[in-house]
Length: 486
Image 1 (cartoon, rainbow, N blue to C red):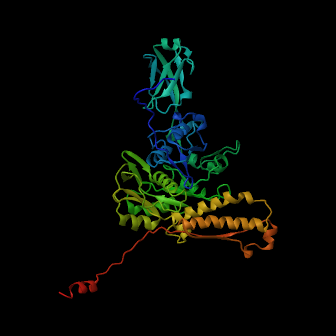
Image 2 (image 1 turned 135 degrees about the vertical axis):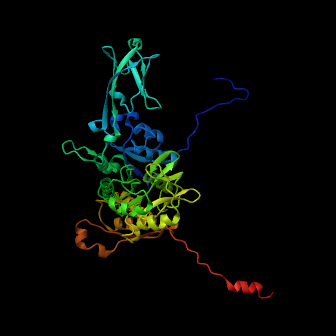
Image 3 (image 1 turned 90 degrees about the vertical axis):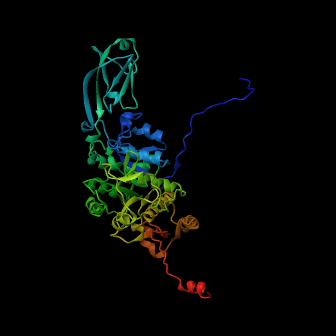
């Protein structure tokens, strides 16, 4: 050990701010990812990946700023870079085993310079490389190593003396073809022969495999499709037979949806975004030259808002900073909405948007079911999410009581425990009231003999203060009092 005497400096790696964590708004996101950049591409297809950092997400499914081809990446970016919140569940549906999802690159000759070959094909699956030095097939890890550089090209470094001696090599490969992915891949299904489930069918895998309950389902880049929107809405209820969540849907900001705000209500109706467990968004958001579907930004911001509020989804995400620089159409054309346009056309028809008020904020509180419903638990997004979250927590808390003797002690334990929890919500101003009770009228002997116990909970999450009015009038008495003595 050295003997220190004097003044010294020591440097350490630059620290990154750790993401805040919360699961009330856990995002479960479906789409395409650059799995050719993942640590293990073979294990990145139709497998839910729980990630707590940008690094984990990048290793799990890869990352690229090409949001058009790789739709999962906009949510990765929005979650970990724009809002810095964790965790997130990512499901990539781009499958190299499907011929439509890949492109074959025929063999071509490339020079070897200083022991390196720069292979300029894009989205190359490294395991697919076939490199020939004359008649000799080079072996990965023995004759060469290959990796992607920052531009997406493949850098092949020669290792063996025989490989280094070559002046040129022939290279063939397989590249990903994100354009080959269709809505059927996102919706997914069940392979009757193998029992394999894909796409949105994997929602049911989240809790059994990862131990977390979905909070928000989304598929930015796909949810504007009516078939995908319908599937997402269908998956929000009775997950694993008992859990509930919401889905965030995009209304297309192009000719297939709406390019002017007055056409948005009709586009919303046509895509079938009407669910009580859904929220609809229009247009898109931009951060500099990056363009995101609004659902990706809104979901990341909602998760951040929940995590900042004790991981309780009682506070509406509306009127919170969206951290964007512009609202845009799909082609990048800026959309300039004022509050009246956002209110009278979009919010009035159950569409959430963003407006600039000294910085862009999310604007809107209603679910996609509005204006068809006025029931507060189904009309207000924050209330709907609180109901979902509270109901999920009830299941997770008391499933340990299932199959135990249905006696007075068990009943009282559930009622008392839940009222203590509810009183805590009220004390923290999460809701106006919360009461759980056991009623004899809900539990006739016939049901008790069937092993069925029922408790009843009444709860009142606060409604967002969407409209604050100040009634003003001229005070003539004050004028008289001020001037009467003159």
